Amino acid sequence: FLDPAPSVNTEIDKAYTTETNIQNGLIGAYASMQNPYYYGGHYLLINDALADNAATGGYQNPVLDEIGMRAVTPANTITAQMFVAIYNTIAHTNNLLAGIEKVNIDAAKKAPYQAQAKAIRAMAHFDLLRYFGQHWDINSAVGIPIVKTVATIDVKPSRNTVKENYDFIISELTAAAKDAGEVESNNYLGTNAINALLARVYLYKGDKTNAAKYASMVIESGN
Image (cartoon, rainbow, N blue to C red; front, side, top):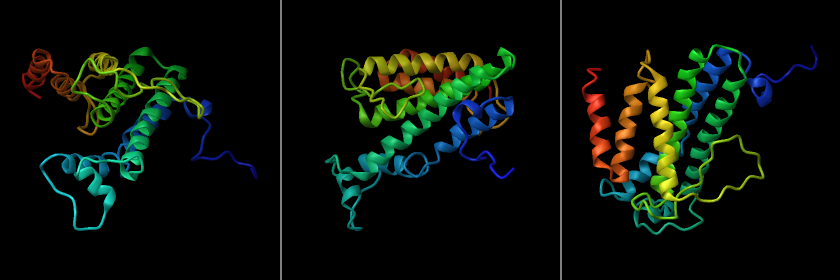
């Protein structure tokens, strides 16, 4: 009893043994998106600074001004931290998906958890692509690295193409939409939310036919 196992910093091999562990891991994946450099603040702030919704300046903040002037340097701490924060969410989902495979529960119970984890991972890749890749050009080689396995510290993935990015994101979301089902709370990604995200991805890709298809599925669902 004098040498207890840490309750917060658990080894990944021991983290997932029960369905409750899976539920907690999923909540952790959602919670990671609240990072101040992701949906907790800066990701949304930068969006406005890059567009015509807002202007930066007046606070002697050169990091923000670089973004507002669309002249971002490699030393920009906001974009660097944002990059890390979003890949941290992806790491959470990769660990969760690996853990789900090890837990001894029915496949039917696993499916909705896996679907939500894949949807979060796909959305994170999509968010990265829109900021760090040439998402407007399907033929561009300048996409973002796809990370879909648990990575070690020495792994340094290279960029995928934009087409590979879209193919991965759409494949993940399409599979997730089939298994997510309806969720009890709007705080979780159910079928309608995932289909809405698919419509948005297709719209960015320039595929208006599929964008309309998935948007209509959400609108006509009655929910």
